[in-house]
Image (cartoon, rainbow, N blue to C red; front, side, top):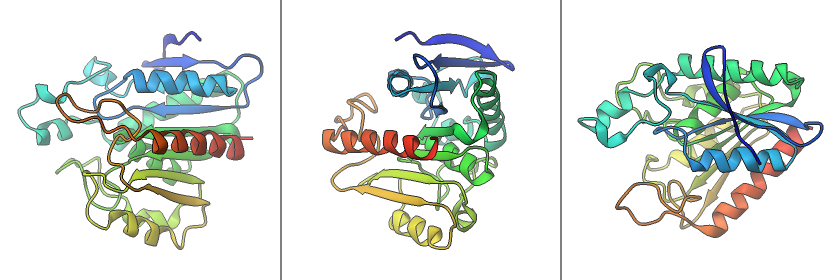
Length: 242
């Protein structure tokens, strides 16, 4: 399957289109470093299941598709270099507009994000920008995860107002989560009107679907969790995007 490279509203995009009529559209949001083979695989996977998938390059304001975390003086400086919710939201809006141009209406557009992108997917759900959202190992939901970044604040106080279906997929041993954070997310969602679900994978950590997360670190891949998460994600979008 061919992934198209283009630009829309000044935002570089990668696009994978379904053969024949599309059952819906999914905006795919990358992890903090940027566009990787993980995102390309998901574009192809979604297209093979009948969706039109679009991945905006969220670091385009820096003129890059990928940012090296080790190119910053500290992890704190890397966190501060991340795009904030306003700019990421604008890029998601451009991706949605592109999907509209492909003939896909708002009721059939969802968002899928990973880590930094997983948090951004939840923000899109909270803003009502999409019809459904799925987040893999999103961090910075209850506890701030990006230092003093003014545009990436914690989201816990917003969760009870969630009305968009949301699927959160987490490794129970994720080192980027605060102690008790998954419990706190579930408690905050108790009063939400949305069909929201938090799935925990015991024995899995951050990036449990990847062979490699950071150079020099052991592989975080937990094959059973990765396969279950893929199955749940595709079923979730098939259910909520029609």
